[in-house]
Image (cartoon, rainbow, N blue to C red; front, side, top):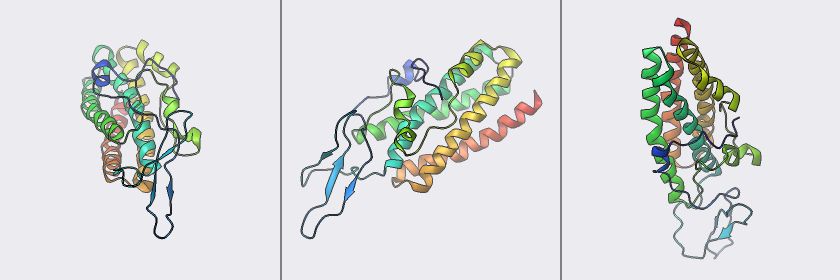
Length: 223
C-alpha cells in the first residue's frame, strides 16, 4: 500500500474537500437504562477520547456504523490515487481506448470524492487531504476494514515513467488491481454498513468498477 503524501488529490479536487474533525475510534452505542435518554457518542480527534453529546442535542448521524465511516474515509485517498493514474493517460497512453477509459474514471470518481467528503463533513468527521498519509485512514490498522488495491510508490513511479504500449499495459494492470480493491471495500460496507447513502455508493462502485474491470481485461488481452 502506498504511503506517499504527494499522490493524493489534485488541486481541482482538493478545492472541493473540507477537512474537519479527525476520527479517533469506533462509534459506540450504549443501551440506556429505563427512564434514561440514550447516550450518543461523538468520535474524538487523534489522541482524544470520544465525547458524550448532551441530552437533547441534535445528532442525526451520531450512530452511523463504523463500517460506513471507514468506507467513506478510505475511499477518498483510494479514489484520489485512481485520479492520479488516470491523469497520466492523456500524455502517456498510446491506446485511444485506454485514454477513453481514463476519462470515464475521472468523470465518475471526481464527483464521488465530493460526495464522500460532504458525507464526512456533515458528520464532523475527518476528510483525508493531500497532506495526509493514506495509511492514517486505513481502519484495518485498528482491527476493522482495511484499504485494498492501492499501488505502491514503486508501481506509481514505474507508471509515470512509462510511455506508449508499456504505459497502456501498466495502466490496465494497475487499474484492475485498484478496482478490485475498491470492490472488496465496497462489498464490505454493502454487507455490514448501516447508512443508506454509503450502501448506495458502495453498490454503484461494485457495479461500475466491475464493468470497467471486464473492459480492461479485454483491452489488456488485445495489447
